[in-house]
Length: 323
Image 1: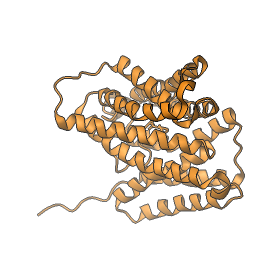
Image 2: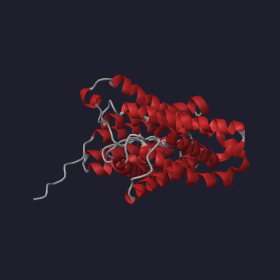
Image 3: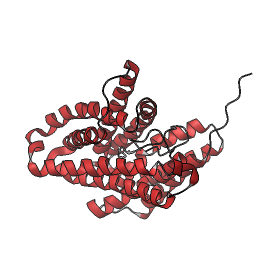
Image 4: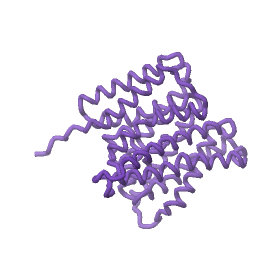
């Protein structure tokens, strides 16, 4: 999660910031008894914020590992440890699934592995806050297109203004590395694929079982690239320990918090809170990596956040009824 990869909005159309991170484990949405009654919402909001902070601080810690193991090596460690963690916690059932079920799992795994690989390539080149802001454009475009309302053009305009401002500053696209910006945008496109496959998988598997199974192809996809890129550096005990910590921060903690939060919050509220992901990323980048953003860049992030929130709050236009 990428997200980061932490994302969990069950309906990919209205939610600009889906879960991964979205969230990833809770594709069923907010259907618990508290979601409608409103009980426990302050605690649930704190869980969502804690999930976002854990995910982005995990990404920041991962960036500190790049000199040791490279971006591809760190992605491999993160996804392998995350797969082991998710399988141990969820213990998904392997029998009784159709080919269509396994196809959804495979699609989710490929989207998850590709999204994380692209995102880690981005944060190896540009600040974490800027990378997450650009990545968020993928779900935002999906939300705007799915809304089919004129008001959505306003949110699209705000987002474009934010991107223009982000790229037009002295430390904009030219200063922050064009390849890094391209990787972040590509990760956003894969985030869209992740949302769609996550919705299908969540409808076919209970709880987080589909995600746990999808972590396996994601890990298998990234492991050869990590080994080819980093080799024996991945076997260093310190690197292994930090890689496991990244998996816990970026997967274990966010997944757990989001599962509990989605039992108490409507999916739209959850998506609204997840729109603050760039703020969490900028904070983690500043505190862990010492990445200082200038005022124009902070304004750019704020514009994209507001656009994302507006897109989440804009309901889709009703479809015409068939005669």
